[in-house]
Length: 318
Image (cartoon, rainbow, N blue to C red; front, side, top):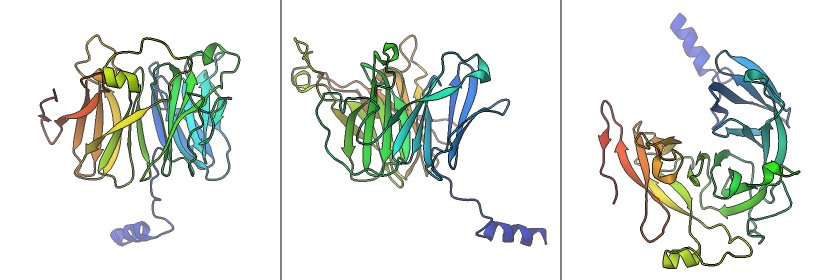
């Protein structure tokens, strides 16, 4: 009788567990304090993990419009995807330690403009695209910027940056839409590498090919392998390339981690960061960024496949 009752409960459409959505929960380690950001329909709940204490509620927003959420690595800023906009929240300076910190909205970013006056990093208009609601958000590092936030909306991948001097300026919400591209397939999974490494891993539902996006050197530097002699009056347009990561099954998870052998180097630099990918075959894989010759950007290479028991180490690419 108990078995039949359980079967009826599981098979009932009204009582069945709803399908899980990506990035509904984000976790960060804020100076030893584990914090959670939970999407809950029309609002976002901020809480401590241990003990489980609700510290703040963001919203309410329009019903059902909260799609994704992402912390910075240090936990001092939070991005919330509300419809087609990304709302940036920063920790207030007058808060105390622990649970007394508060997060206040400082910018609202859209697929067409940033939160400030500039439209792109080079001052040139970006190509027009059709973007829907944001499906994923991720923070990463970009050279010369204070913060960098990636967003994925259907077939559109975009990057907003905050200038390095924005923290000291009167308008701390001065963001710009630095880069945007229309893709052939929609993106639903993002993982940014923080610190100095300007890297992003992306994949879509059912994709067996993940991508690692990285900055490309300017045309003159790529051709000669040398830095330009004169500094241009305006920064050159941001150029991004990508490398494919092949998997035998659809990709389910992507996460950047410091390399175990980073030593005294910067754990967030491209050479000392590894990407952990997990696809639906249940096998984790580690990818390491290998330096390319001729001044090119580092490229990812498969360095280990972690099966049951001991992992299988693969030779690094030269």
